[in-house]
Image 1 (cartoon, rainbow, N blue to C red):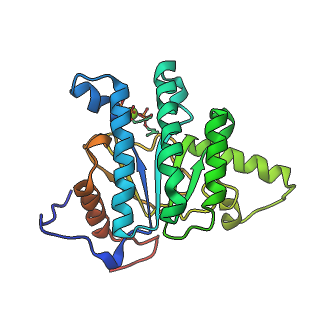
Image 2: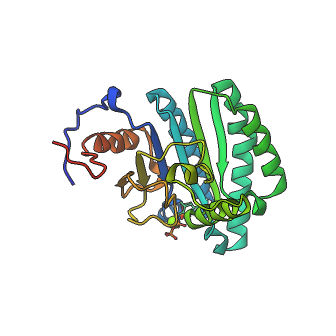
Length: 240
Ligand code: IPE
Ligand code: IPE
Ligand code: MG
């Protein structure tokens, strides 16, 4: 990886429009400190809130967090329950203020397996914030890239469509009110996608850092964006 000068700052004219985060490493963060995994998850939620504040200050328009995959149900029940308790708190406290902050909030994923009270509150906030303009914020919960595609295909079949364009297909995805991510950040050193936005990431720039998610702060966000700004996005064409 290229090293950039420590003094280099973000070029505010060339910010990514949309950043998505695969927030990994909460468990390892806690283990390193001799703490239970759940404390890693609550530190992870704090890092999500801080990253939203930092993105707002920078003027990022869309931000997406992959919080719970369709495969994460395979974790022990107490961990799953603990995670949903954190999501419940996030929705009731953090997201509940988004109308005042002019943030449009969405939960991306299959809501049918998510506890009812959370879904009700999410539906209410999604409706309330649907015309907000400052920033779009999404949490992917019970989200899988394959599920997203299959869910779209099933809806298309129900609509009796015989053929469909790429643009139209995207309107059936959970992320239909979001742009494709310009930058996808994965923390904790793993270099894989783990069933995140498979369709939407066709031309996303990927950035991997060894930092565990709870340690992801403004400096880390700045590093990721500066790294992104050194990429030459060609989209299959030829560019100098
Ligand atoms: C990410 O942290 C949060 C979720 C996937 C819910 P992990 O819980 O995966 O943390 P590690 O990978 O075990 O360190
Ligand atoms: C990816 O993290 C999913 C989320 C961040 C929600 P995992 O910890 O579940 O991914 P794997 O199992 O290491 O691929
Ligand atoms: Mg993990």
